Length: 573
Image (cartoon, rainbow, N blue to C red; front, top):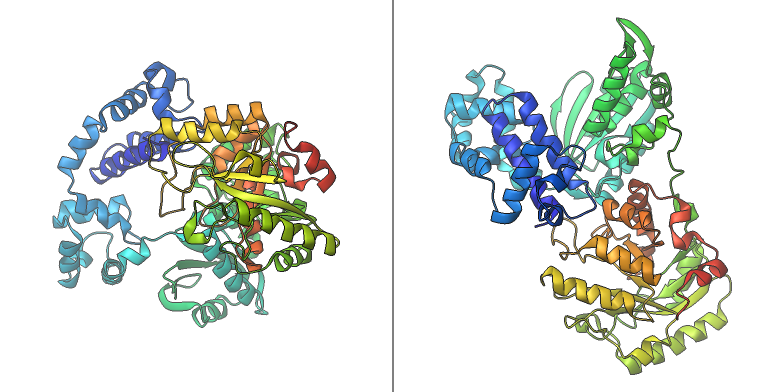
């Protein structure tokens, strides 16, 4: 049982309790507990095996929560959760997937209209029963009907790549208006989370109606869902929804901080404001009714006695305390990256030649690359056996001698097979400049087998790095069951790098484990896994992931000059 599975169980308890009208402090305790669990680098299931006392050593996990975790890990369920599920039909939880319906509104629909499925809710809305409820209206009824019709699409989360691309295009268009002075994306997209449920757009403008008209007319916008004087919600053609807010210039910084989140980071800041006799909200910082600050984010943080905190760090993982102690890291920048050590060519499943990939990397300012086509196990990708690989390396060496301004390493993305051996003979791997060992198959094997495979790869004298360690596909396929503490200990002992795969569908390592690897002193490499020249452009998403992990340029091996990078490779190669 992975941390995310445990966290979801406590989130569900929080939802069910709120629907039942439970004490808000009790609800918050479960939601906070879920977040603490999800943010842990260590396996909560492993810690639970040591008993509740071990779990209680984690800040935010008390006696009650620890006992429930132990029960969940050992039996697969929590008695309280099962009892709550028996009291609240599952269809009621489905209503939470409708945009704009939180637990309080869902509770009203359930208790007052006695609807317990989406079909029953749809019927009640069509008959006008929803609008009669206190706190609801005819407009709410229509929104619910539209939400039910599109719930599958609306409930979908979008990759950071898709969300950022849409946000950038919309913001650029809004900034072209003469009435707009400032515009930015906020929310999870600005924090560069792996996925986004929707977009938050923020502007200051002298004519809010013109801004909303411009957004409504944008080719990416499919439909205007709501519109007021200063706020508009639209649905994009791909199903992603976006909220636009037009705020006064003096409130822009406070609003940007507020709507960027995270919610937990905002709570800490508001508490800090209260301790100083101030009130912080999306309109600014106030002392009583007197405006104090809010024009810029820097102004807000400075008034609270803090330096500006980069959005990627705003997850309430100790960033406020580090800021107060002047210990915030200088986060990695895309321009810091000097090399890319994972890419494919037409020799396996890529679409460009060795020379084309090298030239494209050079055009992007990279100083060195490794060509890492697939090994033979990945037959669907035309993986290379020993004979073809050696011929491929000769072709790489030829290009390397003919092209200037970029170094090219002869590499291989070598599968770690289900029997814990590597996919190519040792003598072949010993000839490589760079060996990236990966899991592609057998990801559902028990942890013991997965760890045997990974540890054998780490200990292999030719392996330089473990690529996309868990093998997950974001939102589609969970990763392998890995004991990261054991893996990182071995990687540190044997001098093996860990990869953040920058492809938006992977982003593997995730931010939590990337930080844990850094803490073990393991050099991180951020690679594109490009299968085309255009694929080299995903490097930014790996940098985003590294920034969320709090990584600096010094933590990432491929920020080094090529000569220094070579010295970092394992001495036993």
